[in-house]
Length: 423
Image 1 (tube, rainbow, N blue to C red):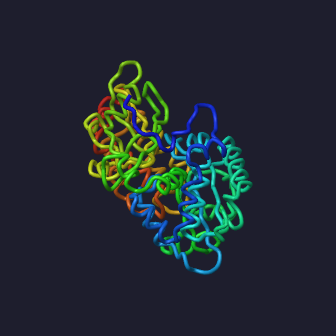
Image 2 (cartoon, rainbow, N blue to C red; image 1 turned 135 degrees about the horizontal axis):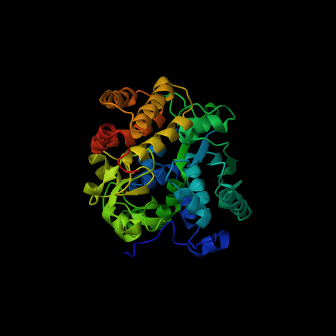
Image 3 (cartoon, rainbow, N blue to C red; image 1 turned 60 degrees about the vertical axis):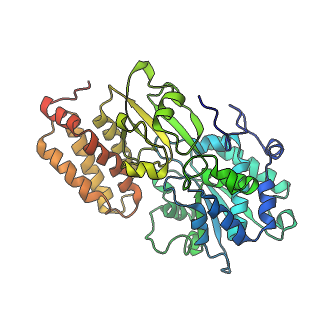
């Protein structure tokens, strides 16, 4: 395997967590000291010029998102970390927190200073009990050392950070549903506009970023933009990315790799190829809500824009691989059942449409499908895409669209044969 620079995982020791003393030995909280010497606007410009893009799935430029925030507005403003991480095939944030939690804490303090937000929340998935313990200890250590609380390091800036353990459900990963849940209400997504930067938590300006996004910020402040941009190839997507491998790989682990690495290198060098000596057939490149890639895409760069060009997405970079004997219809049945179960039921395309898609997929998989069912499946894909209230149903349509585009003959084989040809 190639020896790529480790930034987020530089302190990672399997089975152990690096806390404050170990973090400070490797430059921890130097980024905060540098940030506090600049104005909040200068810190935002620094992050903007670094080219950091959100690591939660959408890939929106972080500094641009921060620039929308009304820094000078009086009254309460909030900073929120999205650590819900319930996307199937995604586990990077959990490993990042367990390895080195102060990266997240320091990143949020820097962000809070840049946005002049006095209160922050780390919103963690309900099942992440080990992460909750680790984050709680890191927050307490930072407060005791003067990095959190009132008058941080004598700067005059104050910031309080709270840990919130979610009650669960995938819909809470959608930022407005997360905010509604954080308020203690049923987590339905909200209409946008207004966006959270204008009206978010408790109706006040709020910024929401992912765990991995915040963890990059201290390193950018400490080492500079030129250093950050040299970590990977593409100029518009600098930095490293945590790739969580799962499925039929020989090695199912999380690796920190540069953006722009090819899928072939991810599969062969880091995944070790496909288990049992079988051939690679397809993968979900960035979690369950991303379109499939096939062996024809092995030389595509694993980066935001190149994947968009081949009708897929980087998402969370949770790469789930499938071998040559896998029925992609069966995979799609399983994925769509997840989205049906996790729908909040707010809008018709999601509530009714996803159930219809599951019924059609399962009917064809069982060998009872007809050409009319396949036509109806195409119709449902068109009817749901772009018409749901939030991105949940849109995410569910991503693998379905790729199934119809790349594996339609497999569906026809089920119809012609009257059973699954892979059984």
